[in-house]
Amino acid sequence: MVELSKLVGFLDDYLKTEQFKDSSWNGLQVEGRKEVKTVVGAVDAGLETFKAATAADADLVLVHHGLFWKQGLPYLRGPARERIKILLDKQVSLYASHLPLDRHPLRGNNALLLKLVGARRTGEFFLYEGQNISWTGVFQPAVSLTKVVTRLRTGLQTECRVLPFGPQKVTTVAVCSGGGGAAAFQQAINQAVDLYITGEATEIYHLAKDHRCSVVFAGHHATETLGIKALLQLIASRWGLLTKFIDIPTGL
Image (cartoon, rainbow, N blue to C red; front, side):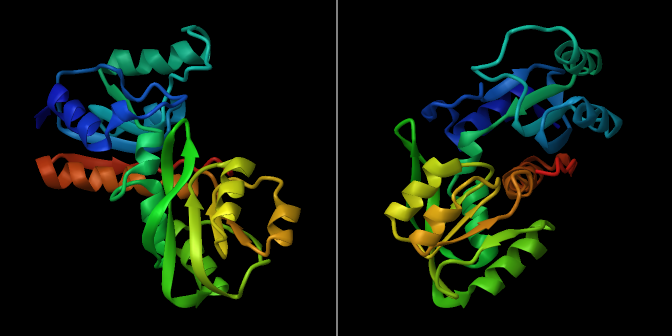
C-alpha cells in the first residue's frame, strides 16, 4: 500500500508532466481514497473502463486518454456526470498521462514501439509545441519490412495496413503512437527515413509513394497500450501493488 499523494508525486516527476504543453490536463484528474493498493491501467477513460476497474477493486485508474481536455466543455452532465459519479461513489482516483507517456525514453509508447520492432533509438522526432514527443531508430543490420510488420502484428495483437513504398530492407524508422497525422509524417519525410510507423490511418498515400517511404498503420489503440503496461510493471515492482491492465479495443 502507498499513499496516493506519494504515488502521484512519483508519476508526475518520472513522466516530467510539467514540461509538456498538451491538450490533455495531465496528472491526477479525480482524487479518491488516500491510500492505494490496487492500480488498474487502460488506454481510455470511459464508463466501461471505470466499471471494469471498480469490479477489480481499483483504488487508482491509470490512463493515457483522460477525462479532461483543454478543448472540452466543463460540464458534468449526461455521460460526463455518469463517469465522474462512479469514480466518486467508489472513491477511485484517476490519473492521466498523454504526451508525457508518448515521449518517455524508457516506458513511453514510442520508445517501446521501437524496442518491439527491434530498432535502436537514435534521435528525437515530431516537434509539437516546442517539445519533441517521439523518436527515430535504426535497424542494425537492416531488416525486411515484412519482419517489422510481423513483429507489430504479433506484439500488439493488431492488424496492420501497410503502404510498402520504401526499401524492402529497412534501416531507418520514425514512430508516432496513436495519431500523428500528416504533420508527423512530413517530419518523418524531412528526416528521410525508410519507414514510418504510426497508429491511426491518415491520407498520406501519395506523399509516402512520391518520397519512397513505407508506412505501417498499426492501430491508434494498439500502439498506445505499451506505455500504460510498462508503468503498471514499474508501480508493481517499486511498491508491490496489485496491478491489472484492462484492454478495451476501440477498433481504431
